Image (tube, rainbow, N blue to C red):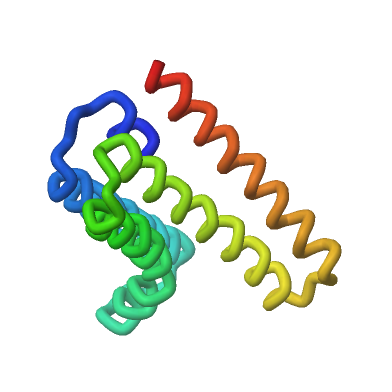
Length: 138
């Protein structure tokens, strides 16, 4: 979302922050719904405890939007224009994705080598997004 909105649109910073946070919330809701629908399909009852549990489990989706939104919010203090703010937010999101992959792998019991490989694979995905942003900007 950051790559496309900051490259092809002329969004004011506040609008881009709201767009980022709302997108995170919508993806969170879709994941919660999919999880609950899956439980219902296999015959498990779905009540408020399951809804809360699924909501907490999927909370990292919303959390992933917070740091890039914060980067957008502080970008004027760093003297960044709209393009620089977009790149800053994308860089924060990229670092976040790499870190989550690395620490997630380590937390799951992967060796350090395997965790670094997982982090690097995620970094390749990030670089593809950065390349797309660069291509959209020209």
